[in-house]
Figure 1 (tube, protein in one colour):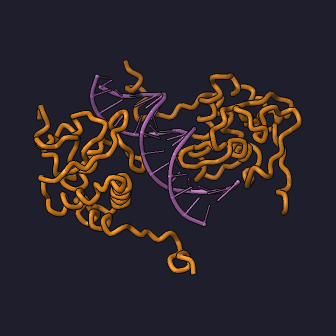
Figure 2 (cartoon, chains in turn yellow, orange, green, purple):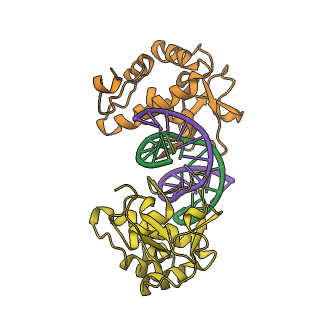
Figure 3 (cartoon, chains in turn green, blue, yellow, orange):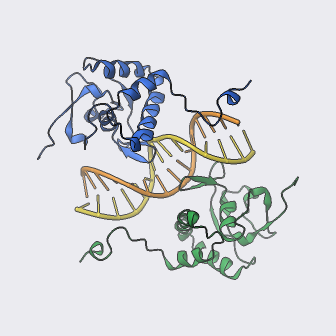
Length: 140
Length: 140
DNA sequence: AGAGTCTAGACACAC
DNA sequence: GTGTGTCTAGACTCT
């Protein structure tokens, strides 16, 4: 018996860790649910290679700054795209799990021990939301 | 005075030839209008380099098979994408200007003198709708 | 420099 | 192998 005869119509089966991570999302507006889900699933796919997904899970569920860097590759212009929207990776994931009203990368400062913070401009970027703190926008 | 002060809010200004070509489109369903417009504008952009847009205009407005090939570059898998939809270029444009109910490339046969017909698998593909005839789907 | 659009190629899945 | 659909980096555009 094929799987399709049991679960037809493209049933969405999120992995346990994705379900957990989705539960921690700050923005619970219905109109953003689909996009947030895509953002988390996309991140899981990238982190599977390195096992970073478990470190991310640990950081978020314990709100612990003393976690390791969770990195993805940096694109040429620094942005990543999820569905039809582009943005800076650390901003996207900090907004998702910590500050839904975050406006720009100018409001984010990395913690001391973050090796792959966005502003270091290395080939990899840390997207651990607990490796950034929120600061006042300069000039505001 | 800037153009924006006269025409604010992203007014859509199609070129005369795009307006003409849009007038010949067979599929006039409202839900497809936006997509068709994108398809024509995308083609115009590609053909501007070669001047093929005028030959296309001639072929379509006179329904003339004795026109030159109108070519675009072939992608690796043969398909092109317009907005969120992928398809074979000659099928897309034959559907647009001749047979809105066209289902697949198996229904299309190139005219004798078409040098860049899709099935020739050259680096360029002819999208002149009057360089193809419609045939019965094999096996139907 | 900041933000948005477009799409080929990569990938995934169904037959 | 065929056919179709999704995702997104890089290219491009505009401001």
